[in-house]
Image (cartoon, rainbow, N blue to C red; front, top):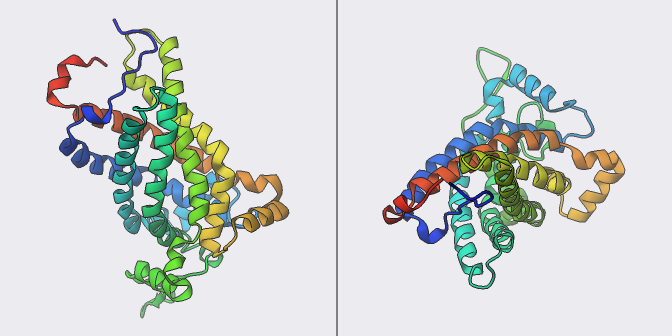
Length: 317
């Protein structure tokens, strides 16, 4: 009989690292491919002025699908897969920092907040340049008039429609470097840190908190993985709601080429009021919900599959 509320946490020293990393890459890629369309929609909603292009998440999905096809929902996906490196850096940092903080505090909340924040710092340092390029690619098509850089069009001989050449990632990268130099790939870095460090630092403690509370309410025989799968989206919705205003500012700084986080925030309030701070929230929650389910189920399963052989028989889930 499992003790109610006692969610077992697999720590770093309990893992077979070879299994952990090899299975982790597959898990991360699958998760990103599943939720990427919502990221495209969120970015376009956040960058547009008012409701000039889309009236909401569903409207954006339908319009993109109708005018640009499935490809439109996956603009920039290939370059975005490079963030797999950041994903591995994130989970490694998270687990190692948890282990380090445990020497000073046994509190799971303290370990989660510190480790989540540090993991996000490492991940964003790797991710921001990739995000800069992928976000400009996301804006191609219907939203290209809102971005500073555009992929070079190629006019076909048999049609008057403009077709983007295969090297559009190279086009955008070259344009960013020509206009802003290396610093251009870290535009909005501070805004990203101000968005994702709090988001990560909030997600983990809320995740563990909700999992423990659900465990207290659920029958003792209920599998912990199910409780964790429910706790993940709850934590994501909470963290996303709290940090969404900064996420809107981050998107505008990076796509529109602004230099001031505070100036962008003030202008957003002047032009669109408090509503502007909620832009893309539904798309963000919609994307974070399945993402959290996949991450939690995948990550907790990954840790179970990566458990050291000598510990398998001693653990009960």
